[in-house]
Amino acid sequence: MQHDLLWMGFLFFSMFSYGHPEGTIKLAADKTILPAGGSVTLTCTVDNSDRFIIHWYRHDSESSQGQEMRNYKANKVINLSKGGLYSCRGGNEGKGGSVSYTNYSNMVTIEETLSFNATVTSDHKWPRIYGGETVTIRCEIQGGGQINWTYEWRKNKTHEKTASSGEYRISGAKQSDSGAYSCRGRRDRFSSTEWSDAFSLTVYELVPVLSVSPSWLSPGASVTLSCEVEEPSARWRFFWYKAVPDPPNSSYSYELLPGSINGTKENSYNIHGQTNTTGYVCEAGRGEQAVKSKPKFVWSAEFHPGSSLKVNPDRVQHFSSDSVSFHCEGNSADWRLMRVSETGQPSFLNSSNWGTRKQSIISNWSDGGIFWCESGLGEFSNAVNITLQNDDSAPLLLSPVHPVTEGDPVTLSCRDKKQQLLSKVFFYHNDKLLSHDSRGELNISAVSKSDEGFYKCQRSGKDSPRSWMSVRVFLVNLPAPLSSSSNVLLIVGPFSGILLIILLLFLSYYIRSKAPEESREVTYAQIEVKNVEKKRRPPKTEEGAVYSEVKRGAADLIPEYDDINQQNKAKKKRKGELSPPPSDVIYSVIKSVPIMDNSATRQDVG
Image (cartoon, rainbow, N blue to C red; front, side):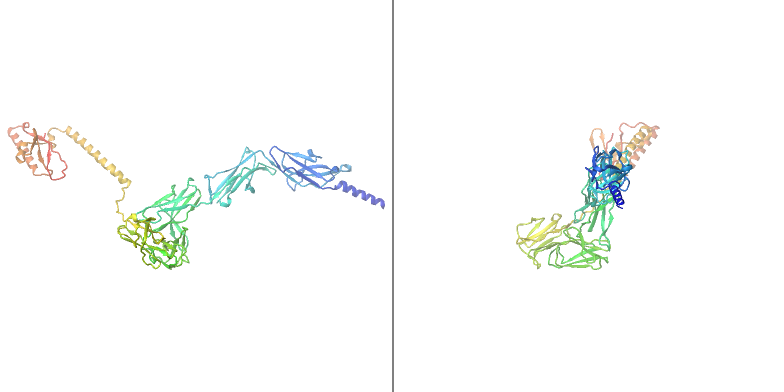
């Protein structure tokens, strides 16, 4: 019995010592990133290491059985130049060649850096990327064209994604997509290039800003719209819209203005003939992205029958404690009262946006602004610019609410809170003192366009708010400018007429040169001046020159010429032959010339 116990103890000791060796095993690396062309040192340590031989293994994955690297057997420290997943364990050879192993050590991943450079590029056409646009960045690996790469991307040094393609595409870019992007190429699990330099991508918010000039209409004036963007040289196309009230929506619908269906390269657009208050919007676009501006208004103070705004009290300056009534009038059943305050953005004052209520009353004002009505038919009323006086002891300027007509008399006055006329007041036009003498009123007997502008009054060192006075000028209707086709006719017409006259002159010359002598009686008249002189003797101005008076349309002279010819022919018949013209007969060339009055035209006789 005692012998058996000793044998069992020996076996247990043998199993403990050789079949299941004791000891803790650990694998460590001096670095986990293997630089290109460098090496990494692995160290395997086991308790009671003198009793064990170190075995090294390389694994394909954490769950796979490792392949022993026999070249490194028994070495506790090895140097590697290849990436991979490594482990080690200790082994102890027993009797009969059997080996008892410890457990595997922890696994260490060595990342091998390949000697290829990765670079991030962008295909974006413009320096800036705006929200909503699509941008693609690419990972290019120099000299690695023969390797089937897998690409890894990271943003702000945080791993983003792995892709088989070298492209990273961002559709509908947002400002949150901004960041520093870098990439690398991976040949396999344990080898890759270094991360590329960071590519900085910034997504900007595209905010086109529309400006209008002028902001208040003058009769006959043109309106210029200008659309400004932060990157004006980026081949934008600009689209131009008119804002149309669109009940029951709180916003507007938009109608393209003529000539902008395909956009314009220029960032400005001219409008002619506008008479009503109108809102406009511009849209800047390139590629697949386009963004509209906020509405901008061009104001008109003129009343229009379809939609109008009346203010009571009927003035443009009020004390902040005053109650003011606004009344919308026109053909529509739906209305809303709108205001643009100093912030520049329109807001509706009706509690329910659109409604049938046409009147609104405002008390205890916080700020003024430009007020107008919008109808359910899509119309805008006249606009009224209300300014507030917060100091009850300061004056108010009473000026015309609506444009005044050039040539009409205008009176401006200064009043207190009780609407009493103030005396000893100074008036300013565009901040320039009009007179150093104080007065009670400013009277303009015949207002002109030069009187248009901002006015204010001052009393006891306190100023009223400024108000704009608009002057309406009636323009003379000029003929419409000739079209290009009319201009062509004006040039071609006279030229054709001149050419025709030249051709007729050449034709006349040709006929005369070819005609027989007898036919020349058609062109030349043989007149015996002595017979003519019996009727009418013209004055003789110089020797050998005799003039005969010929009146255009003077039919009474024609029979005289006929009588002369008949008498000559009768004489020649009696003689039996046509004798040559007598020496005292003078020939004259009779030409038809335009006569500007009833005076006689004298013809040279040769």
